[in-house]
Picture 1: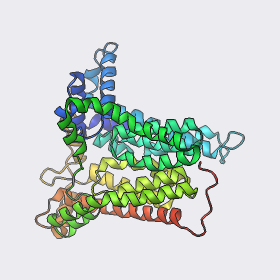
Picture 2: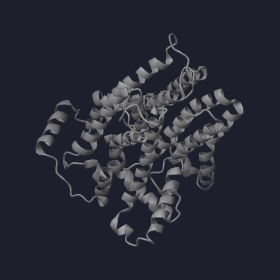
Picture 3: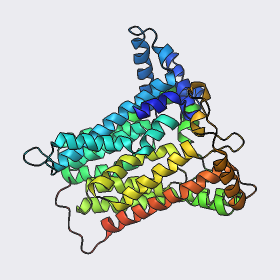
Picture 4: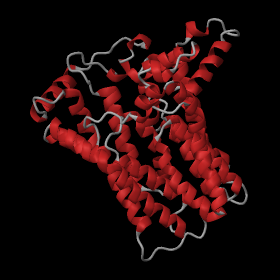
Length: 438
């Protein structure tokens, strides 16, 4: 109820505003790649949004005052919540199944389903989850759900059916956002190892086909729009993450641009080397399916030249699983640091000192905000002015400065976690062969 209340009170960021426009476009059958400035991905999101819009308007026949009670923005957030609930339920059931005893009870003497329920609720209570869906407003929960479930499905069962289901799920994730395509390599490797090249070829086809079949007709209609919006999009490359953020904080915007450009050019070679090592380890049986997916996810976030706050949802199920099942101390620290960072950015820290308020970013889409603006306390505003006055360059904007300051600990924790996982999985001597892919 807490996340639902926040979702109803606040409109969210400009992302959410763009998705409401996208909702309206699907109603009048406009081409999102030509009309919308927020469509930089394959078609699954706006297709899903179109179906959700149609269902919502159909519900108006039963509840005529539906749109008078709830806004389109909140209805879109309800779609995020459905995928969150599905993800939390899957995480809980999977962890419960892994710990179920022969008598159907958990090791704590309680019914296994009760433990699974508590685990699922625990995931939903992680602050980073409700901040991204309720306050920011973003659909990254959808590819996060599809990719994670794909790997857990493949991890848990070694049948050809599970390989097909996992591949199709990953294909839908790629149809939602482009970057999950890198997960095709560890997935096809383990399918090839288990079932041979014919099943592996079919698996690779299922990953690629959803995007190709859905995007190709749109490309025929508007090739330039698709090329510019989808193929030409590289994110916000201004130094908001990693080495680029460090360069922007401590040196200059110009140097940060050079660092980001180098990072962008180096991303593909670095990911290629990581995927080669991961696939080799999986082929030898030294790296399990789940660990292969985890290393791939960590590599994407560590090597990427830019990451937006909402993108962290993609990593949350991997981090939560590692923190609970490992238990990985590094994953636990990452979840804490990320959650504190997002609470500060979205709730506490004013991002505009000329008009400092609580929940400042969630007011970007002010038309859908119900709660009156709450002014930040004077002591906090003075502290932010003093801190930025002492440490910020005069030519560096306050907003990117304070956000990068808060993001550096997240980046460091992520690298510590990644290096720790890589050392455990890639060491040659003293490593026992994984006897079971699950």
